[in-house]
Image (cartoon, rainbow, N blue to C red):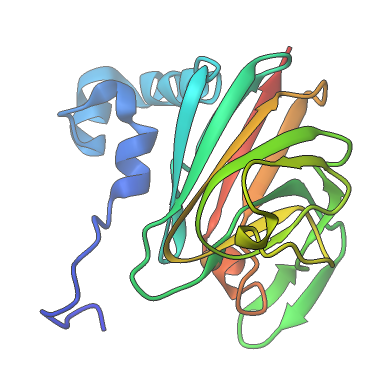
Length: 209
Ligand SMILES: [Cu+2]
């Protein structure tokens, strides 16, 4: 598949380039050679304490990863996340939570996190949904959701965590004030029996005060 010339080649080093967003133009090895490993670690640490997002964030789902795969949100900030499914062929969702403490044995991969979250980040959070395009389904779970426009365009469903699932090419806007839930959260796509999540379709969200 990866060698099929008809398949557009996705940038394979996206994550690493994002990770080193502050040192654009230097490869990892060049950066290490110039500044040493300690500096690289320091850069990574600063990266994890990246400035809190403001305004509109675009979150892209691809096969099988998110861009960006990290975010920092500040409690009380009013944000809009426009979630886009950029895959030409696959359905993807966006959930945020904290991982299940139990793990399960999945041959041939070994011990893996179970699917789904223990805590759904969106529980009790007021969220406004708008501009639905190609929404396959939307599960509000315990969020307090307001829908702009005809509800049938959101294909509201029940079961599982708060989750918009988009068809290929779909998009959806989520507007909310970051709730007072500081700490490290995770986001992921559990489509196809959580295989997407397990092979890397996930990200980290820092919520800071
Ligand atoms: Cu997915």
